[in-house]
Image 1 (cartoon, rainbow, N blue to C red):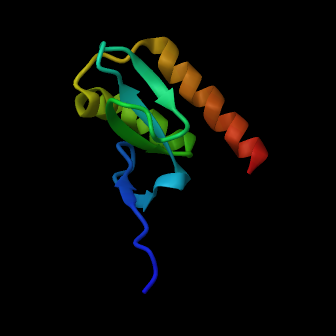
Image 2: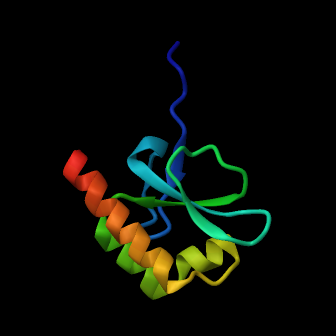
Length: 91
């Protein structure tokens, strides 16, 4: 039998996808919000597709904030957008 592939739900489009097709955003134990490109940092996590539309949906509906139970600074949304552009160029 093959290994089970972990799936996560995007907070923007609500679709289930593999972890490596998504970006993880975490709330650290000391209440900071940051990107987790390794997927292994400690903290409460939420996942977003690598699609800018999903980020816009999550931003507009505040679903990322609800998932992490914290207010997201505007700068983090910009950092996420930049990271998505860089990953799109590499991929």
